[in-house]
Image 1 (cartoon, helix red, strand yellow):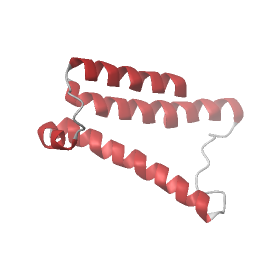
Image 2 (cartoon, one colour; image 1 turned 45 degrees about the horizontal axis):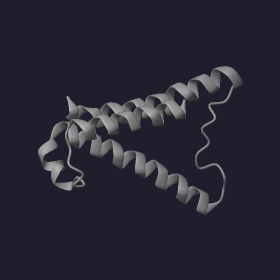
Image 3 (tube, helix red, strand yellow; image 1 turned 135 degrees about the vertical axis):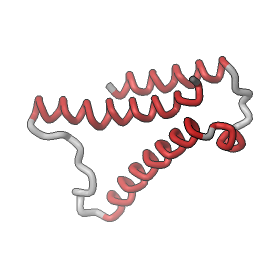
Image 4 (spheres, one colour; image 1 turned 180 degrees about the vertical axis):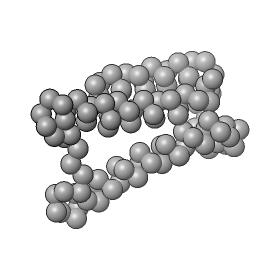
Length: 101
């Protein structure tokens, strides 16, 4: 079960942050509120591209962890996994999603 948690959290983050919130904003105000690559400034475009790239890398890592967890475990930080680390990470992820809402 714990190998699927990163994928669940990434999908929940994207679903809540970019789908549900954009739909709610569109319904209330007539605009989704997502304005990416519209500023006309190259430095702002670079920051937006970096953010989208980071979200993409997190999604790839989450899928990788769900499919082939032993291979990905060689890249983890040595924080001593286990139930406490899983509980702490899950709490931080849910807390971040709750703050985003």
